[in-house]
Length: 198
Image 1 (cartoon, rainbow, N blue to C red):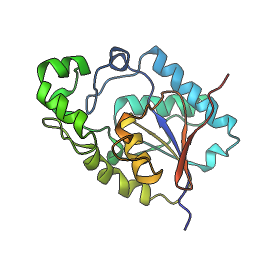
Image 2 (image 1 turned 60 degrees about the vertical axis):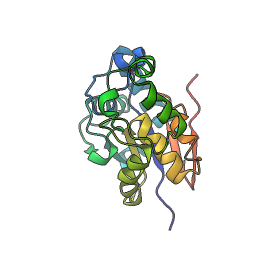
Image 3 (image 1 turned 180 degrees about the horizontal axis):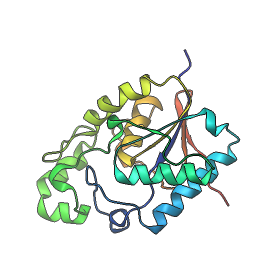
Image 4 (image 1 turned 120 degrees about the horizontal axis):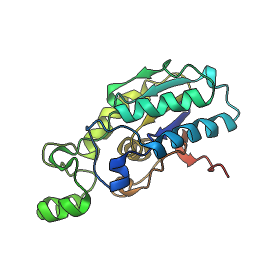
């Protein structure tokens, strides 16, 4: 059976994104750039010529993803609040590292930082979760989809999906750039970015 197509959107920028801080489970709102990116993603989705009203829309429960999906839907003329939320789409938990930059982590926890670089898929930050754990959390969500779906979630979730459903090597997936304001299409066992609007 063919798996439904997923149109994946990473939430728009927050001030913590701009500062390079790990957000994880922290509820950080979008900034002005992030709100523009949400609208831009909606415009890109519309340019694909899809019957957007016929797609399912699902977001992570985090504030930044809900703000993004509402901005996206509003930009294409749909009811901003008519979407589902799924707990399994939450960002990877960074535990005690949340709120820190990678430079701060390297200074405060050099051993943990080295261990995370040595095995990015399996390493569990203090009080957090690994990409392997995240992948097992999101796998049932993807396997349960029955219709083409717009998913608004997080960079970590996208990286896990790339390893699970698009053939990305697990040792490389955690380092893949996941752009904001763009759409990553998962279809037919592969993933491809929709070209950015010019």
